[in-house]
Image 1 (cartoon, rainbow, N blue to C red):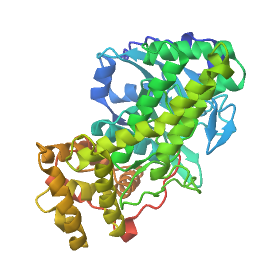
Image 2: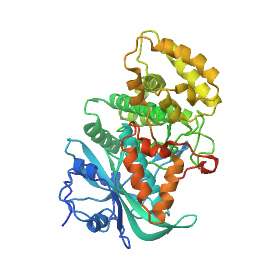
Image 3: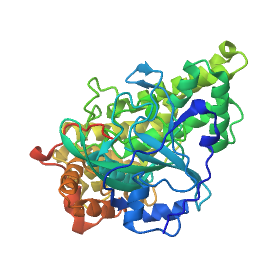
Length: 476
């Protein structure tokens, strides 16, 4: 039986400057590690074959009918430095589908071999980062945060070499698209106005049909990114490598490299092994995304008839972005302590939240568990200095007067479980040794992150001193 994928490809119809045609490089012994059947149903994939056939298809050994494999071209600012030609160095877009919900999505392989953009790399990925992205992206989806998703993970039966020999794997990623800020930078840096116009037209038709001008497209992307960053911060998520080539214009979380969820609360937390200066620390994420979208503005303004004269409204849109993020942040954190907005309460509510975070920082409390405890029967017990909590709690209780269903609001805003770094490392070690049980356990529990699951409480515990994962790494 052959898998029927209802491809309806639009990116492949763009001119050759947008991509390089490339077929996946076959692997030695593909073996299916995981397959997301609910997502397959959403994509309209029918008559699923056996696992061996799925492994052949999602390793790239068998290219399904209707696919148009290609590596996308893009540029990007990486930690502030501009690279005019990056592109998919180890990924291939197989094609697009119109899902059963009517939405268009990309299906792409990651780790499928070298492309013209590989820059001396092998184009492969090892099993650890593949399973990490599978788990974290699906956890983000379950948390209700816009994200790319994982359709399949396949072991290649080959060894790849990084610092040591590692088992190879390939991820199949699903996204609303893979168009990035860096894609716009690619054409703008070349002075290719025709290519930039075609990219704008394609992006507008695909994601923002209501945007009638490049400025309106920018404003729409800003709105989605402002919401996305606030949602990350509300669950303690740190992307780790928010370069412009990792900033997707559709507003999804993309490229789960050195990402992590915070354990102990501290606003300057960094996990990424390559972020030596803390450019993409937790608290810097609003600044980073604003900086990224300033680069998008610089590209889009060149489509105006008189770019110089058109600069002021683009600049105003970027200058307004921090305020939009702050408003979104306040709404998310209000919900985390059971509040709704009231007239003239923004300053007081922001201070109430800031004071709680200060208490958590001073007492080195766990971010996720402390917020979840606020809706429990004994929130005071979550704090080490309970007298300090009592002072804050008196103000909080006074503010809660008149709120309806604050506990339900908090339980819907504060996850019971997140994919903790040390549990991810345990899962990866087990999978490399041939045991997928920890992977399946994580996937099952993380599928309902806001529901308490007492039998799985061990997965909610912060790491002990010897379990702390101090750094996370790129890999896919």
